[in-house]
Structure formats: structure tokens, C-alpha cells
Image: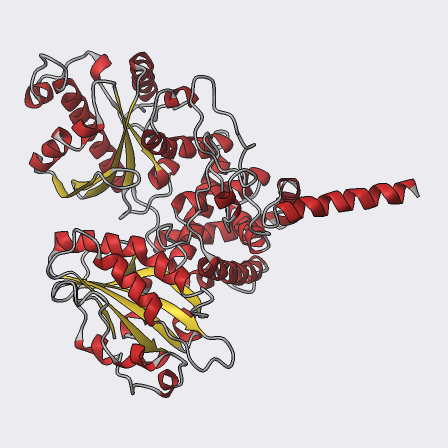
Amino acid sequence: MEANHDIHNRSRNRKQKQERHPRWNQNTQQKWPNNHATKCNTQNNAGHEQQLTKSLRELCISRQLIEDSTGIQKRRRVMRDLDTMLCAWSESLLPGSSSYIENIISPNSDETAAPSLLSFGSYRLGVHTPDGDVDCLVLAPPHVTRDDFFGSWVDILRGEERVAELHPVSSAFTPVIKFEMDEVKIDLIFARVNNTKWLTEQRMKMALSAVALVDDEGKQEERIEMSVDDSVLIGLDETSVRSVNGVRVAQVLSDILDGNLAQVDHFRLTLRAVKEWARVNGLYSNVLGFLGGVNWAILVCWVCKRNPDASASKLLQLFFRTFANWKWPGPVFLSSKQKHPPKGVKQLPIWDPNENYRDATHLMPIITPCYPPMNSSSNVGEPQLRRLRDELWRARKLSDEILSGTKAWGVLFEGNEFFKQHANYLQVNIIGTNEDEFRSWFGLCESRMRLLIVGMESPNVGVRAYPFAKFFHRREEGYASYFFIGLRFPPGAERVNLEPLVADFLSTVNNWEGRSLGMDLTIHLVAKNNLPSFVFKDSSDVTNDAETPSKPTNQQHDATDENASEEQADTPLHTSAKKNPFSPSSTLSPLKRTRII
């Protein structure tokens, strides 16, 4: 009886904890990993797995996911030249110092005024694509400020003939300067370090390590990166902490692999495959509420950490098995959660669903593995999580068939039936006439798109939204990008009115102060049979950023004819949303002509 009584008490206590935090439970999540990933036995079917890993690598090469040695050397050269430019600029800011031009011509050997240039993201992890950008952090000494970075440094880049497509964004959540140097795309962010001695010592260590790794032909096999520890956070504001943590997360992921070259190679190949699968299936975009590069990297590293001897082919199967069955919103942790800051570092906001109600509402928490621990996937909403679950489950089935030998890797990257799965789609057209202005307009609209997606599932609307996380850019007369959301309606629904939701969304983008003539956004309801042909073309026509899109074609406008198809006529949408132009801001200014058609 006592044993039964104890069991009853434990059950009751567990139920009370779950009632206090029904969507997340610390005790439960600690046990989940054993339910999701099974240790693999690499001795079974080793030859078969090696052949599958070889074919997976060949497929990644054929899809141009791996950069050749020429491209790698070009990136390293650009990074070296950029580092030299930064050192000359930093020294020119010292009182009584020579000008930037003089410092470039005759570099000073004094390292105390020199910043450090560190990479992070896909490039740091060794999984960047040939056309991918390089994420870089400038760790600057105390005499350099963020105002200098967006002031005199931007002026230097603007005057450099090797630099093109320069776009400083000082107002971003993490301020960034975007540009190309010798056709290599760079995203440059900034943080000022208070400890000049530490910065100087780290630069010297980097230089010595680089010399030690030069081979007989004078080539450096790997770019040497500075080790950034917790002490760097001392005295930093939250913006600088966010900037530094991109480097620190990439560093922790590398450290988890513990320098095992075979494991690093398998991690990279698996991550390349996962990211390509996510792109093809419209699941790759943190801004749109799906997962971005750091999210996918943490998930892949989680699987690699628990299966250190697995081949890339087995890791890919385990990845889909693990996260197709994951009990979200149970969090993914790579390391033990650090509630308290390191010594000397001030307390910063951390992800803690027990203390923060907002954190407890997160649907798919993927926690960064360094202080302060944050949810890197806080943008994920119900529509995005639904699509992620569906596609992960489908990929699990395909990967099992591939490992069993009944299918080849290509089936994972053939795309899916998204543009055939739904009878109706909401099509959002972002339009501009000037390239620079369009880039800003596109960024604004893209950042607000989640409001439209999530709003569709409010009780007042009652629509199930299925967003596809890719923008289709058309290169013809002007600039335009197209975004699609699959729509499903409740059984027996007779009337669904999207106008209030769309009006709120259009009002949000219309109120942007940077809006100018030529910037436009239209929303169409399109039946499946009348989707534009470009959505069915090869994924090479699809991208996630605003490169060189153009205006819509006549075919595009014809696709929205109210009598185009029987499927569209049967849609339970409020008819004025299908027939009449809609402009909530038309009374404010002739410029504000954003509308729904």
C-alpha cells in the first residue's frame, strides 16, 4: 500500500507541475532525448552507409552546394584585405594619427589599435555555398564606436572601387553593413571590446597559429579564428552581446565536435543536406517564421553529439527520425542551461519559460548554447510549425527508404507538391521601380509578412495558413517579388472575410516612413489552376533575398481573373475580397496605393 501511495503522490505532483506549465516542463524535457534518437551501430551495413555517404556528397556537389578551392581562396583573400583596411581605419581614429590612406600605404606595427575580424554562421562552420555570403564580426578596441562604424567606415567602403552593393542598416535589431567586395557578399556587424590587452593577445595568437599552419607551398589550409570566451561580454550592451554571440555559438558548435576531423566532415555534409532540403521545401527563413541557418545547425549538432561515430548518411536519417517525433514545445538544449552570468558579466535576459510568460508561449524552442541562452527560433508560429512537422515526417519516411536501398537521395531534393496541395492560395506581390528603394521596401514587407500569416489563424478569420518560405523574383522590366500562402477553410464554411485582416496588414506597411513613389504591394486570391508558371520551375529560380526581382507580367495579372476557375468560385471567401480593389490608405495619400485584388 505504501508503494502504491508513493506512486499516486508522484503522479499527482507531476500533474500539478504540468498544470502550472502545460506547454513546457523542465523535468519532462530532460528525458526526451532518449525517446527521440537511438544510438546507431556503425558496424552494421558499414559498406552500404559509406556508399550512401559518397552518393550524398556527389549530389551536394552536383547541386553546387560545395565551393571549389578557387572560390575558397578568393574569400580568404577578401577577408585578409578587409582586415588590413579595418586596421588602417581604426588607427586613423586615434588622436594625432595618420590618415587612413597613409596607414594603408605604411601599416603601423602597433597592435593595440587594431580590431579583429571574425567570421561566423555558415562560413565559420564550413557549410557555405558558392553564392553565399560571409557573416563577419568586427571586434574593435575602445576608441572605435558604432557611430564610427556606420560613419567613417562606411565612407571608406563607399570610396573603395572593389566594393559594390553597399547597404548599411544601422536601425536593424542587430545593426549590419551589407556589401560585396570582389563579388564576395559580406554581412558585417560590430562590437566594441573594453579589454584592449585581451584583444591584442588574441590577435598575436591568431598570427602565430596562422604561421604554424602554412604548408610547404605557402598555402594556409584553414582560416585561423580567434577564441572568444565569456570575458568578452564584460561591459557590453545588449546589441553588442547579440553581435558577439553569433561568433560564440559557431565556436561552441565547433567545440562540441571536439576537433574530430571525420566527425566534422560528417556534420558538415549532413548540415548541407538538411539546409538544401529545407530550401527546396520552403522551410528556410527565420524572418518568415521558419528556421534559419543557426537553427538547423544546432539541430544537426544535437544529433551528431549523440552519435559521434555515425556516417553522414546515417546522421541524416537520424536527424529526420529525431525531429519528426520531437515533442514540441520541448526545448532543444546542446548544453546545460546557464541561468547566471559568468563572473564579471552583468545579468542579461535569458530564455526561461518558468519565469517569463512570453517564453512559455514559444512553440519550437531551440536554445543557443552560450550565455545568455536564448530561443533562436522564437519567430516560429502555428502555421510554420505545422508545415515543418508535415515535411519532417515526409522526409523521415523517404530517408528510411533511402537507407533501406529502395530509393536514392535525389527524392529528398525534388521539391514537394505544395503548389498542388491546396485549392486556393494568397499571393503577395512586392513591387518597386528603383533597385535601391526596392531593396528597402522588400526588407520592410518581408519582416512584416509573419503578421499576415499568423493573423489568418485567429478565431475571427478561421483559415488554416500554409506559407511557403521562398520569394520568387522576376527579372523583366522592373523589380517584383512574389510570396505564396496556401489556404484551407473549415468544413462547411460558407463565408470567410479576409478584408479586415488584410486591411490591418496593409495599414502596417503603408505607415512606413520610408515609403516612396513606385513602392507597391498587392494581394491576390489565386486558384491552384491559375498559379503563375514560374512557381513550378526549378528551384534555381527561387531565392530568399531581394537580388534583382522585377515587375509582374501580364500573365501574372490574368491569373487573378474572378472567373478563372471553378475552384476559385467555390471558395468561401467574402466576394469583395476577390472582385474589388482594396486600399485602406487611399484616403491618406495618392502614393499609398497598396491594395488587395
